[in-house]
Image (cartoon, rainbow, N blue to C red; front, side, top):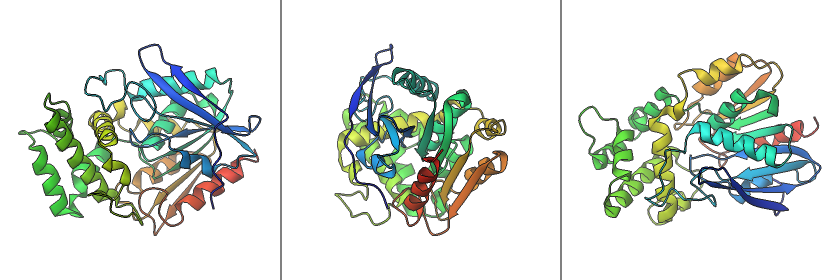
Length: 320
């Protein structure tokens, strides 16, 4: 149901002023409805497949790689790249700087998985700059959600989780996510690489990419790239262990104040990585929000019904 892939007609590197350069590109219709893609991970990067969910005749689509990943520099794959200036608040500021740089008054926000958290956080800070919001595989990256995805979901994969935990050798009282963050900062490159591999193997386990073919030892082919593995593992553990630097319940409380931002939330009923509870809580608090639970779907757009629901929402909002 997706549109043909279109090449960007503009691109560049946004200088954030603190040593980071954020890669951005724009495709579609230069006079179309502005929209911004907020990718997941953190650390996945904004791949070209995102462009195919927008009608290129009706949308002006902005894609950007969040700090430290994709084509943005410096890369988090490099152990010398510090993460002190890589937080949710920095990413929100980057989005706002990019919007101003491109001369956009308002844009639709499309985000998935971690991108749903960042999209909500951006709208929380800049509601007057958001026309609509479409989110899928919805999460708010709360402490409880992080504890679920790193520890609680072990009830479904006890053997894989035990291997994942044991490989981290957590210290007494140390959460698994904190143990991995420590290992990923180890001065020994072999220790860092093994931690990244084990972290991404666990990611593969609970996401269980639908229809994916095994590549090397991973279902998600991206994890076979050592640089991607390291980028992804460093950024995910960094954001998760800090619960995205957001107060508990902040995003749900924030949507209660929105009476002018229509939204569509799409989540999988069989999603073990991000169960539907956060999406339901957001929908209950958000005036004018629609919630679509795709009963047979898991995590991500590769599952039945997810991509069609996203495209239907984007097609509808294109008329506004």
